[in-house]
Image (tube, rainbow, N blue to C red; front, side):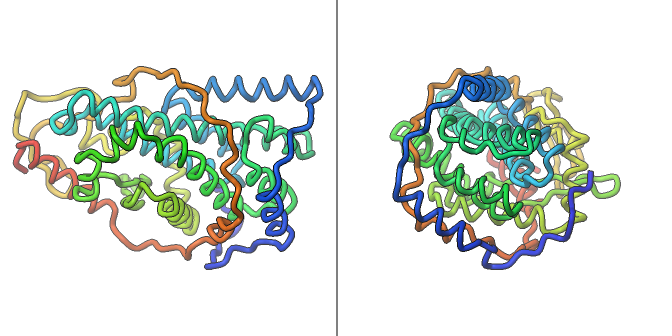
Length: 371
């Protein structure tokens, strides 16, 4: 599937219309109650909520829903970026039950880390997917339905952005806006909560991620007969601005090179998400345990030379979670964040595959398996 209509030209300053800037500044200072909905609109909003809940069961169903949407709506770049980032969240979830981390984390820590990842993944989907469905229905009806966004508890910021996108079809502005929106959305609901600060962020295991470079966001792509990795290592996760800048860098990396983008789309289409790292490198990972306990494994440059493959279970290692409803307040109260809409120039430097392979080597040594 080739979604490239034209080569993705990016500059330091995204093309923002004066009317968009004016509307964003205006809405940040005013809060209007949602007008009453017609019976038809009430039913439609209920249908969106039901569809969202159906696909928000777990990381696998969310990740698939993003890709399915993107296939038919390739102008919504964010949906494919979200699909790939959600895949990475799933791999991190199953790592907690995989080859290495059970030796480094207590069962309670494993559960806390999973709860953090699952809550964030769930929250973003329940906020973003209704927006995608509303856009899809707007296209079908050939008229904008974004007046319904407040009834779905979507930020006033995104209502302005979607209305602008309907007129101008600027995928870059929409993607940057959704990145900003979702990271601010989880900031107060996940990152700043006392529970996750204590059970996750203040733990040594979380802080070791930077040392071991285990928090890498990987975008697999098919090159000939092999699957190679692009992406970036994530650092300073606790700062909302850093997460937004990371998201924008990942976006420009993903969509600035037509050949790489199509190679990544090709891989994603051919490999349904299971949560196991076997999805991208079956030569190195397997979703079932192999070999004997403490059997020697030799890995060189991410190639298995001796011993069993690394255990990387599917998401069935974790049970589905029933979530509490989130706080419904609107995060958008300060128009200063408009500056964050500017996208960086594409940077395809770095070798995340080498970083990933080095991290696996370190984990092998820490767990007492000499490589």
